[in-house]
Image 1 (cartoon, helix red, strand yellow):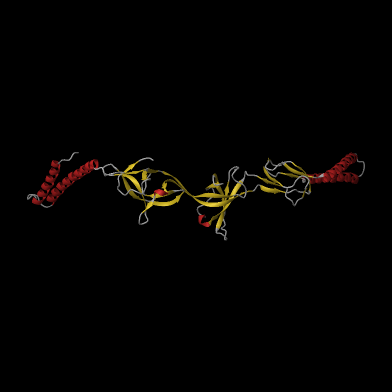
Image 2 (image 1 turned 45 degrees about the vertical axis):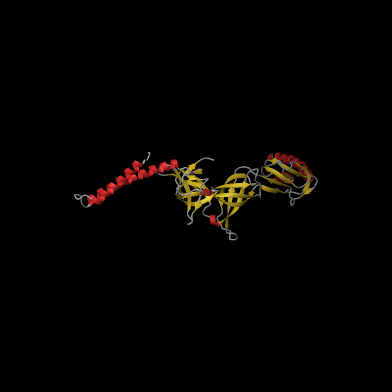
Length: 384
């Protein structure tokens, strides 16, 4: 719309006519009818004046080169899942990290594995000298052969009603006694062999071949990394926020991340440090974890789905301590402007804050440039 001086004069004349009409009044119209006519006339003048104002502003914007829009970027406030974690340190443990002791004393005659070797259950680790027991076994086996022969003959005679029952029972008793003695000696011989009680890795072998091993001296250390778990003490303030099955993120070596879940929550508060214990189960074997390692854990204590969460850096505070952001809005002339929006926030984690009130899904929040705009400023949204 192009404005001319004649157009301006016409609006002024119209306004004067309305004023004159109102001031003179209509002698035939009285009371409320006169007021209604006056109101309709004023509304018509106001509408035309407002249209005139908008047209003038548009022409000013086109002609005025000093009016500039602030260049900003925008962040889309989408709904998603917000998770909050708290940090705690834990100790890696396993029920399959043992020190093996021989069950009998003797000189080490053979070591069948090397340190670092993976073994299965029952694998022979080392063998001790059992020469004396071997000789005793041979003597008992020889005596047992004779006892078996005598018993068989005595049994045939007894079946033929020849000989006495005492002779038959003595032969049977001697045979069974020697069988028991032989079984005992063989068990003693087996005690001279150190075997793996479960599958794992031979972490250390302590004695050397030729050294004397005894039941009081450790022979080897065996470790299995397949059934690791982590124990930690958690302050009692989280007693209602932690439950079995909650997800846990384990950070080891400052970079490696492993995921687990809480398998057990302690039922007793430790009066010394006002904490309760948790046990985190780990799935499978991890090269980054070792028994007795100290690791940092992030325990999930809050999860909310379909909520708006935004970067915490976008949130500002006014003089009253109220949180607000600047959103991208449109004015009456369909121009993009910055609009101040008060919001209500709850908790923050990992640089993001959950917004409970004030933002809708998909709204654009001014990101870069939010510190330099004011409410109502013209903006131009760009991508950097």
